[in-house]
Each structure stands twice: as structure tokens, then as C-alpha cells.
Amino acid sequence: MPVRLKDVAAHSGVSIKTASNVVHDHPHVKESTRVRVQQAIDELGYRPNLSARRMRYGKSGFLAVALPRLDLPYFAELAAKISERAGALGQIVLLDATGGTAESERIVLRGVSSHIIDGVIFSPLALTAEEIAGRTDEVPMVLLGERIVPEGFDHVAVDSVAAAQAMTEHLLSLGRTRVAAIGRMSATGTHSMRLSGYRQALTAAGLGFDRSLVRAVTDFDREAGRQAMHSLLESEHPPDAVFCFNDLMAIGALRACREAGVRVPEDVAVGGFDNIAECEFATPALTTIAPDLDVLVDEALRLVLARVNGDDQDVEDVAVPWRLIVRESTGGSTEVGK
Image (cartoon, rainbow, N blue to C red; front, side, top):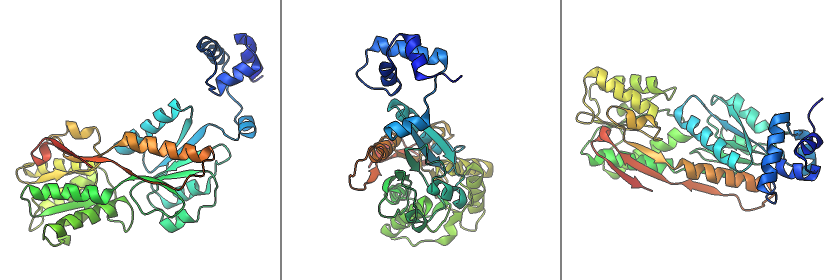
């Protein structure tokens, strides 16, 4: 027989109401009582009936988090932070790796498991703003990522245009005049915005946009950066600096420079984006843009839980702070915040 709440109450010597208050994390419970009930829950293996909980309270306590890739350091760290912060708020997170494919992301929009989900935090990669706008599922959703989003959706993101412009300006400030770019050159989304910031910095410096200095990749991992950097170094007029649109590609670019006998930063300065932990341990340590993930996570959870709890506040578009961290790959050690 499944363990019931009244079994937990009897085992811990409290009323069913008190046991329920502990399960639902109500604040007005003595700590000694909470510990005793929790011990009973652990010993008996009690699990709340989610269907009954939703019927009674209108909430399951589950949030879905859909990210493109969990095997990439940035998204892995983001998922871990969301799970940790949500847990502290009494929420359980269900993670979904969409692979960044349109079909998988459409499943998220359709809300296949919406009967057990209170809210969704979603970082789309392949879907257009028009497709997202056509969502019919009514479960509260907050969008992440540097992209154009349709009206009616809360959105939390870094200003990738401004951050990419700052990185490119930093490379130009070193006296470099042939600044290359490596990224996924889609028409929309994060990398398109970073390309826009890169181009704006070149224009402001009086330099034209040279397409021969741009390498489009189909993936955004170390090997993609390595191959793209080799292509740039083997060109007739190689760059003297490169801005990679994420850190993994920049680390691949560092490897390509080493394989080609090119010195970093003396011959080529290299910058990335994301500030994954690997940046500090690369040789040389990688200059990068560091989004404030703590703010990103806290704001995403604040917004989705406000919607879950019925708050009819205006839709918000939250700009996440970022810093330019200058390390050895561009010959320095400073931080510039935004």
C-alpha cells in the first residue's frame, strides 16, 4: 500500500493538518516538529500525490526548465543555479534539453506535460518570434536568451549587442585592425545580436565590415572554434584579433593558434563570451564577457513564480548585468562592468 499523509502524521505523533503544513512548507510550524515530521517522511518514503495537490491548491510545485544543451558548460551552470535557487523556494525543477531543434522546442510550446507543471523557463534557439507568439498553452512561461521576443512574454537576457560591441572595442583598443569573428551566423537569436555588436564597433572605429574575417560555424563547441581559427590563420590576410561568440569556440581558437605556432596575445588577441569556469584555467587565460548568472536566475524565478501565483503585473523585459573580464589572451587583467 502507498504511504499516506495520515501514516506520516501517526508515525511522527502529530495531526494530519500539522503533517500537511510541513509537506507544504508552511512557515508557522515549530522547528522541532518540522524535523520530526520530515524524519517520518524520509523513513516511510512518503511522496505527495501531485494530482491531489494540484486539485486542492492549484499548484504542483514543479517548474519546467527547457534549455538547448546541458552538455555545454554555460547551460549546465545555468541549470544548476536554477535548480538550487528554485529548491530554496520550495520548487522542484524538471530539466529538458531540447537540442536546439525546432521540433523539440515546439513540444515545449505545446505544453505536453502542462498538467503537472506550474510554470516554464524556456531558452529557445531555433524558433522564430512568430512561432513563440502562436503559443496556446496557458502555463506561465518566462523566456531566456538574447533574441527578439513577441509581446506578452516576460523575458530575461543580457544585452548581447552592447556586450559584443564592448568586446570588439576592447580588441580594437589594443591597436588591432583586423578583428575577426567566429560564430553561428543565424538570421535571429543570440549570435546574430553578437554579430551586430561586432559590426557596430567596427563602424564606430571607422573600419569597414570585412566578410573575409567572419567564419560561420554550424555548432558552437571547441572543435568548431578550432577549425574556424585554422581557416582564418590560413587565409591570405589573417587576423590580428578574434572575437568568438562563446567561450568554448574561443578555447578551440586558442588551441588552433598553438598548433599553428601563433602567439596569443602577441600575434593574435582572443576574446570569448560567457565566462565559463574553463576561461580561468585556459593557457593563456581567456578574456571574456561575464553575464551575471545570479541575477539572471533570480529574475527568471521571480517572474515565473509571480505568474504562477496569479500576479497580473505588466510584462517585463529584464536586462542582465555583464562584465568585460580582461585576462591574458588579450594581455591584461581588469574588469569593466555594465
